Length: 229
Image 1 (cartoon, rainbow, N blue to C red):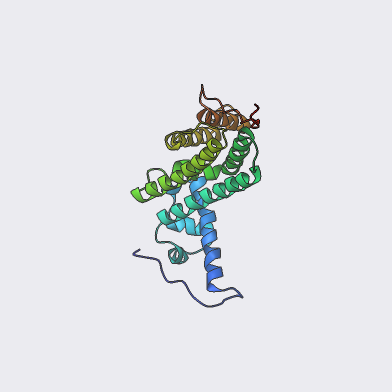
Image 2: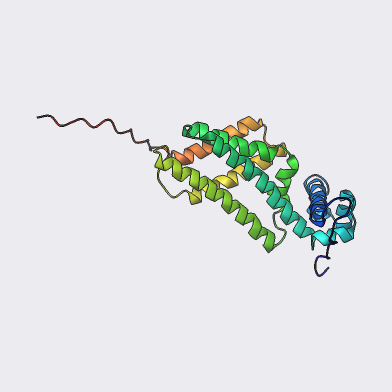
């Protein structure tokens, strides 16, 4: 299929063409979440089987997407957007809380969102890997956004005197690898721990990065006393 088919325009059944298109796209993505994340997986799914699962035709599929890879790309972005929204809400809610409480609440929000649906973990950590150079670039780009978020939080904590001042990019990249691996293994039943225990372990790792051995926060400056003669 060289490209997407042109979708019908105009109102039908009281809905605009844009509304109908959004509804169809949502049904394809919902079916893909099930097929890719719980069923045969991306490699075992066809356009025909996905269209049937969505209750739509293959013609309607090609009105929304060019290939199944386009569906996986859109679904991967959607799953990451859900997690990012949860994290940003937790960042806003954390306010000026101390570092340990702040890190814990933010990371719990991320873990709760990602693990709430095992299909999301499979899409994010399994199905997206090794499909094509294009999707590998997308996967790494989304990982870079998470690295940027961690670096921003770490830099802000260092500015407040709550963390060691340093370049956190390499450490943040390594930490994200730990997050992906542990949460995937936990969801697969390979790790004998509760989600809270897994999250607590990852929080300890992150705090160890922010506050390495030997580093101590600088004591706050006391009031300046007037000179006496």
